[in-house]
Length: 416
Image (cartoon, rainbow, N blue to C red; front, side):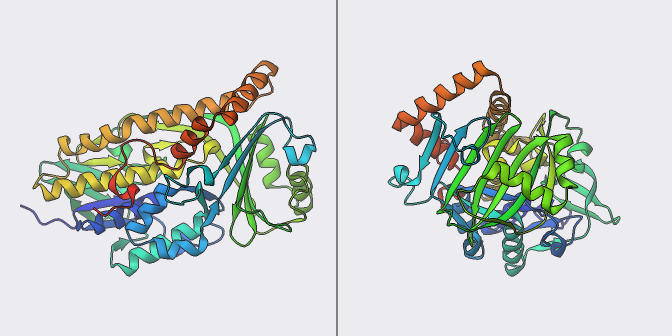
């Protein structure tokens, strides 16, 4: 049998890919990460201005694979989530909406072992903590060098890199994002559409304490979220039409701040910009299959979703946990980890959850990003009803926290 360069080659050393590498290594599997960006470039403040809402089950996985200690100083607990529907953010309009949802971590503390509803962490800090953990554990990383081609046969997968090198392993994984080269090389198509919207992202420093409360306002142009970060900062995710998003990208600091304050209001006091403004186009992308011969897809290579529910990264982290468990168990049972039967176990585990969540988020966008008076009344009544039914509230909190369904071991905090 030909000697391989690794047990699993992972194309893409972002958050999902590095999490998978650490998860595999924790189970005795030898991963190799490749990425077109140097590790240092991913840590620059200008690389990615977004923050991610991390489900408590996802954070359990990071603890289980050894990254929890590096992430903890940057993780802001989300103690409450307040969801409001209106023509303007409730704080800015000065008129409290009769239709709202309030989620409180105290309601599920008995089943979540005292965990919050989730954590807010800047993507840059997640990347830094994961890359430090990977390097500390001696994981092999080749960067900068992206994946350029894929060939497979009965003995393994051969991944050609952009620098001309060819690496082999029984299994290759694409964690490259929506424009995955390996997915295209394997002939896996994708379906999806744009929303004609952009997410305008900025970090601000606030005068008054946010107390771990996340606010989401559903406005006619799209959701406007105020997400609490450490050091009394907040990440703003502000959805606008593509044209208005580009105008805001190029607006002067004074003009941008004026537009921001019209939506933000003054309930948290003076607001100061604490970083650059980023603008990201919003769309849906779903791979037609999660696996191909000797190839598995995870993260945005498999499913890119609208950020309306803040679950995009969590879906990718679930992929990583499920695939790591399947691979580790297959090796322990003496199976070929790149075989069709092995990879289909991963696909069955993740297919339904990924598709149903992606379509649910798409439905939320269409239901809430409009000013139709009939839909406004219907969704307002629906939110009010859920808010009054405690079991319904608790279910949605457990679902958002990743505590529902057939969870991989790592998401339960157990080791592989």
